[in-house]
Amino acid sequence: MKKETRLRFAPSPTGPLHIGGMRTALFNYLIAKKLKGKFILRIEDTDKNRFNSKAEKYIIDSLKWCALVPDESPIKGGKYGPYRQSERKHIYIKYAKTLIDKGKAYYAFDSEKKLDKMREELKRKKIDFQYNAVQRMKMKNSLTMRKNEVENEIQKKKFVIRIKIPENGKIIFHDLIRGKVIINFSNMDDKVLIKSDGMPTYHLANVVDDHLMKISHVIRGEEWLPSSPLHKLLYQYLGWENSIPRFAHLPLILNPFGKGKLSKRDGEKHGLTVFPLTWYENKNKKFIGFKEKGYEANAFINFIAFLGWNPGDENELFSMKELIKEFSIERIIKSGAKYDIEKAKSINQKVLKNVKDIEFENEINKKYKNKHYQLYSKSKIIKIINLLRNRIIFKKDIVNESSIFFLKPTAFDQKFVKNKWKNSMTKTINLFLDKLNSMELNVENLKKDYVNTLNKHDIKLGTGMQSLRLCITGVTSGPDLFTIINVLGKKESSERIKIALKIFSQ
Image (cartoon, rainbow, N blue to C red; front, top):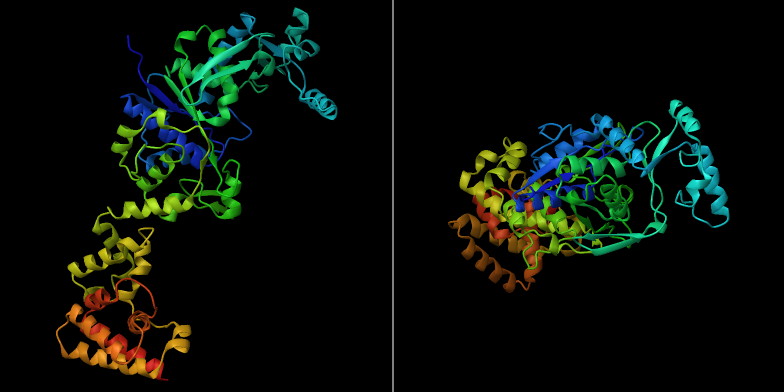
């Protein structure tokens, strides 16, 4: 019988979902859908000390914004629930005791104070402390104590449960991105499986849950690669060799300032956006998200898709349907992917080319509905949008860019006026004004006539165009000048020129 394809995204609700977590969610979603499988959201909330009550909602809202809808989750449910690990504590205890009964795990009673002291002593000798096959026989645990002593210590409920790593040998597993990985047992330590508060560590919980939830693929960050041999060993210890998922460890997302993993601190220090949605750390501190910055959800999806994946062609923009079709684990790179916010902006600009006019119109409506908006027909509003569409990075930028049509300039580029404005320029623009008012508005003829006038008065084309633009918009650069004049019309253009010339003559 063919095994069902099931992939899970299993974040910890300890804070905002970082861009790296969103990429992991996306890659799991794409593979699940490509293989006609299920995408599961599991909340790994076993870290009581770092738990943040706002984080789970933030995770769900972030997935919703990106249209990464789980087939099973704490909200939707499913036959493999519960989908919060804090609600599955009894399950982990059961399997931890199974491992102890098999001689594959043991109780350890060493206090944190004692362990810290040992670490410091070994550190001074330049030795790394490892609670391993050699060290465990010198420690206070169920391997070194008599049965009645162990039972007495268990009653005090101050213990952890550790996995028992073999003293000799090695473990081999295959990673879909990195190939064969071989780790000697001598390089592994006896990791804690159940903490002193009775909650499982990631190592035990994710293996147990992945098995019970019939997860077929584990796609996660590179930071979990060193733990994978331990996880495979747990599958073997529990007799689940036939259900070990296929592993793939994603490359790091590198910060843009050199080597090293992109972090929340990089975002804070350099003003980079590293979260999908805005996160309020406290009343006085927040981190602006991609959504609130103005990125379209599809642009954000494409941006994070390219952080470690290459489609094999020049295409830089995919719909979700196209991504699902084109995506493959084989095209995920091994090396780190550099975070480039300029790339994100470029993708967003491309996405805006396909955004419907009505969406831009709504943005303009909110700001300018009562400010000369009635001067323009529907067709002229669309003309304004099409003129500005390729100039903006974010949809909301249409508001500032379109202000030249709805608001008469009240200030002018004084530096330009001081350094480049001459009497001959006033005379030339007055001639243009006469021409504008004496003929039907034909921008091609108007432009041709103005260029001829500039040539006759020995005025450079660039200076002449900037001067006329200044009179009409208040600035010396922007979209096509004569299209602006065409949209504004004779009356509005004429009024603006007269006001400007009057100000410049004072």
